[in-house]
Image (cartoon, rainbow, N blue to C red; front, side, top):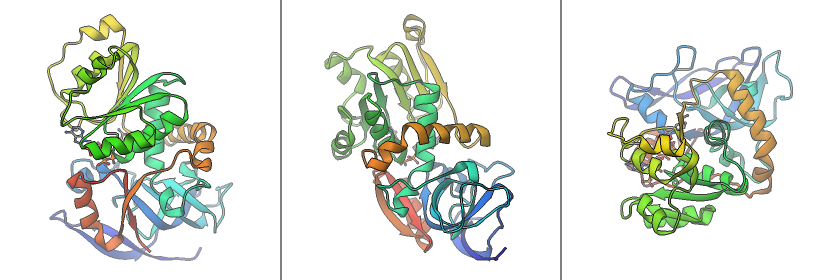
Length: 328
Ligand SMILES: NC(=O)c1ccc[n+]([C@@H]2O[C@H](COP(=O)([O-])OP(=O)(O)OC[C@H]3O[C@@H](n4cnc5c(N)ncnc54)[C@H](OP(=O)(O)O)[C@@H]3O)[C@@H](O)[C@H]2O)c1
């Protein structure tokens, strides 16, 4: 198999990020080697950099959970992919690089309405949204969903997918401008959490006890308000707790409304679980990606050697949607 030189981002002892070179890894039997066109930045990467979200022992120590690009080589047991194909993929780490490895069952075709760069914004958000909103919380056509963090990489895609699959979407974000853009993506209303209490605002709209599903990355004081606005038999899925893991909660609404609270991290799940998510996404979401009804929102692209600036931009919270690294 041809060998390639790889440029990758190394986390230095002082958490500064620098570029290094080595020989690109060879794909295992069921893996693809991808020449990376773009890599998605995720908030978890910021935690990994600070040592607060260590990669699993069998994962690449290099940051980067998702890439798009061109297949350079396939392991001997790979079927359905060949060198020259374009692809977007969930990696097992290692995405902040010119070359990345992905298991074949974590690879997806580039949707017809997406550029190769845009496709890098999809895998992590697609799997996270599908797993939490549809597999865990069981959102159905005609139901109402409240999506916190609607301006995030995860939130923007969640709003568009839920709308395309027939749900009525409400959301929260930190500026009026972000709220209006979330509404343009398909939300009926987005509330500026810095200026209004979303639970009061929903009640004022006659939407007390009306959210069938809540996708929450915020936690903290939002937990009590989620219990308040949830519909009877409502399902609340947490993917993060950016306002805090701990808070005092009155759980009476849980009993009275028969609510379900759940949560998960994507990274810890098995290859088989991720493969099931991907096959359901291909069946239910891809037609909307191919038609362009659902499109990833890409805020800014940075060159690989601007990775420190790119992560600082995410940390600032000024972005809306995804931030990409372009190694080329
Ligand atoms: N569990 C999983 O499997 C999984 C997978 C992927 C991501 N995640 C998590 O999902 C979250 C989004 O990821 P991302 O990469 O899309 O990040 P991101 O684009 O940086 O988004 C962060 C979001 O959190 C919101 N936010 C931050 N602090 C807040 C606060 N104090 N109150 C209310 N909202 C607040 C921001 O809202 P504004 O910008 O509107 O202020 C923004 O929408 C992250 O926490 C990430 O770790 C979890």
